[in-house]
Length: 95
Image (cartoon, rainbow, N blue to C red; front, side, top):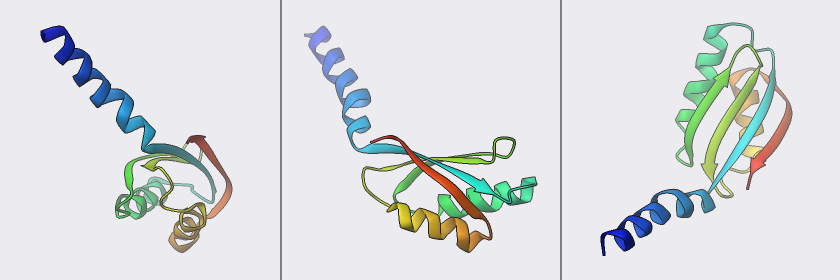
């Protein structure tokens, strides 16, 4: 019984949420300092459908974990532009 419970908890905790998430990587031009990366971090943290934000100043990449199809890639691009930067490449890592 305990084994069945542990298996179901494992499946519920690790497999099911991954079907509802996608990872998006945005290459950003113009991000040169920690204030730049902080402003992008704050912008994406305000979006309800973004669950995790990781900004790499060194690589000039923003990596997001979002709900499956939201926000749209156009909305992500617009958010980068509205923050004052240029998105050069948007890649969906995981659907």
